[in-house]
Image (cartoon, rainbow, N blue to C red):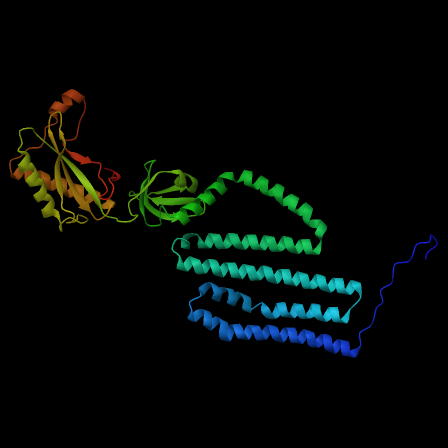
Length: 379
């Protein structure tokens, strides 16, 4: 006891290890290392071929990621076992445990990093819906794993430092989220577009804003669309995700085009119908983009105009962008055919007196998709 009458704390007896203690500890360590390398060899020789034969791709990925770390983990277990057997001084034991924990946390972080990267690449190669976002998901998971591993390591080295660090990260994260609100919205909208795939690279699309063209690239912030005028329009992903999009290449690319032809009321409707069908049939094979099936259709629709009979010639197209060449060629052929048969197109003079401005003799009406009747852009 001391002078105040309190008992002294019991002293820990420090025992110096004998030679056989060192031999046993060394044997424990070497045995653990040997078991680690044995397991690694068994995985390489038996487990991986077995997984490959049964087409267990995810199991194979896990085994490959696990194979490289087993000897290290067993060696760390051997070090801990040997240290407990030797019973070193408290300070030495604490330092050794700290070192083992640091190496273990770092190796587990690296293991998770490799495992997630390989798994995401695997599913990106095998699943078409995941392929566009595989790279973005892989990088996001890698950042999260490294951040969690780093925080765990800091907590292991100094538990008191983790609280102010988390507080600082929380405040910084909130400030960053507020400052990058639009950027983050575009980022997650890009993930949605890439995962749901309402539009894909190479598709011809039209937005409700009127922008239309080929999708060149879908990035993490914006989507690039090349118009037919060879200009590139940059659309933020958030606006693209919120927009009504007509994708003319989603599913069947074939569509139809409707050509409006106006003739005088004195015209024979049967003659007009026959002439338009023959013009369309003769153009098949001669005009690029014009299809033979389904058969062209002529209808007296919208029908009775103010000063003309209005016919619609509906023809099938290979894809929506073929409409411009097809309508150009069909209009020329209709004019030549009508002139050859002595038929007339409706005069616009009466319309000029009523409307007070020029009105086209004939033109194209909004074309309809063969499947659902959505208008063709530019019509």
